[in-house]
Length: 303
Image 1 (cartoon, rainbow, N blue to C red):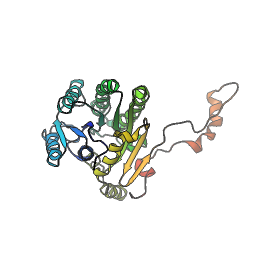
Image 2 (image 1 turned 90 degrees about the vertical axis):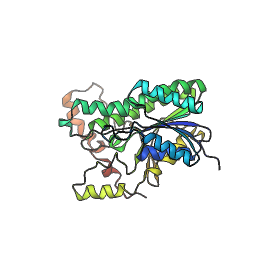
Image 3 (image 1 turned 135 degrees about the vertical axis):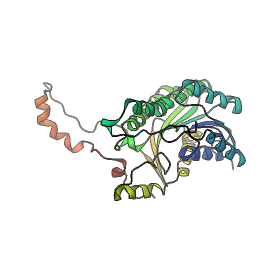
Image 4 (image 1 turned 120 degrees about the horizontal axis):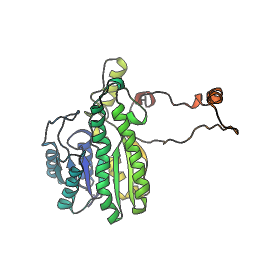
């Protein structure tokens, strides 16, 4: 059977393990040639296993697929140029980029160092920009291509101690939307996925309370392999016309998220003062978004 990505080439960042590895392997099963990118670091960004990308690529080739490893850094412009060149040299083109690479440097906000904030922004947001920007020229010239960016419900909804991660993941949503609008004329699509899966990116969740232990138990039931089919679909020709959207994959569920739009408006013919706003503020209160975490909003057991 021919896969939905037969003959296409993809770059997947952060693909040495976890969600990225599952995506790279899933795309290969769908017929894609895959550049498996991972610099082989720990969750917090320290050197760990420089051979991770090559090991995943070798596994794909052992199963009959086409893949090469890349250890270039997504947080450096020169690094993404190396990834692009690897795709061109090995497979003759590029059709899909999957911005999955990420690290964590969690801290409660009043204790978060500037270096912790910048490190996470550099990998998640700047890394997504760099690779997307490098691919944009190729996609423009060939009049087609797809980008899939990993966001998170931590950013879309909220979480404790992750101001850097939340800012990066919401920044990725804006980046994806901008790419979708600017590149639409060249038949380039850009979408986000907020993945639910047990991986090292969520393995740092504290389990001090019974509620946290229950949350982790649910997450462990959601495997990274469940994310790959949605990525493959969004990267395929079957997703024509779908761009600028935010999806989520949660075990056997797929969500389409809403995006910010006005929910309530007030007007006053003679304008507003702080006092008059205070008098009318109660009209907004039923529509205010609560300070909730992802687990508070998506609280049901995974299907």
